[in-house]
Length: 286
Ligand code: PMP
Image (cartoon, rainbow, N blue to C red; front, side):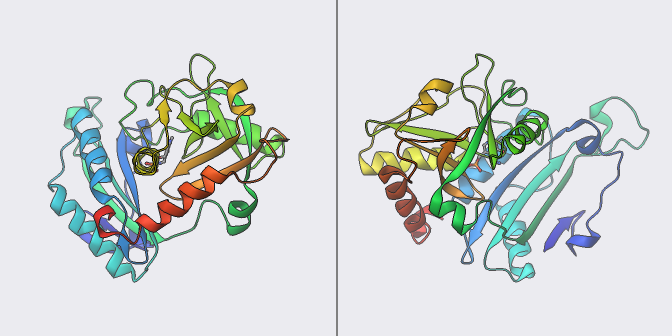
């Protein structure tokens, strides 16, 4: 892979930052991840919107505008030589030269990188559907502070993952403050009931793949709402799937050892997945 750091393109192994960077010490950072499939970015504008929105809310400044960042991302991909890549743009508060406790003294640091894509779900998992555990861990900031700020804070999600592994599941969903289902480590969740879709509304990152599902539903004439999803509702759903930039739409066919409906990937999940990948061929969606 190739990184962009301090104005230079570097091999990933040479891209290093100070341990005194507030991004590392305080998780004082924002980032966004976008994927390149077959040499093409998917929904890059939406990822840039979210990234620049996070920078503004965190009062970070970088010496590039949207076009500048887009160009750096394209350069990282082409220098890496990969047709399928996981591409990240990030900005940390940076390090203060005097170790001052005032965030205004730090020099904000923009970075980007493109690494060969490793799918979050493998072909076998996509075929049979994932086994998810519902952890009792509660998703806390950043989602509850400002869901639109994408931040590395994952302690709740990582603890949820260990709960899932202990129960023989492959990944986890954690809860919101009211005990409803929130999201998982790197993904949003949807359920389908009587042909209608719903996805949690609070305490979650407004994922771009989640937004894409809304767009696809509008096109396909499917009803979709963002509303509370209780644990019981998820367990009783006709279909469940999870969404992320790094994996697209991924079916869930087992929750805590119990099959979702008949335990097979549902028809609406299949239909949306097919349209999702078709859109990658459509320049209007790149
Ligand atoms: N929730 C969390 C906590 C995430 O980290 C991610 C992905 N980075 C998502 C949801 C999914 O968002 P997107 O569809 O934009 O990748």
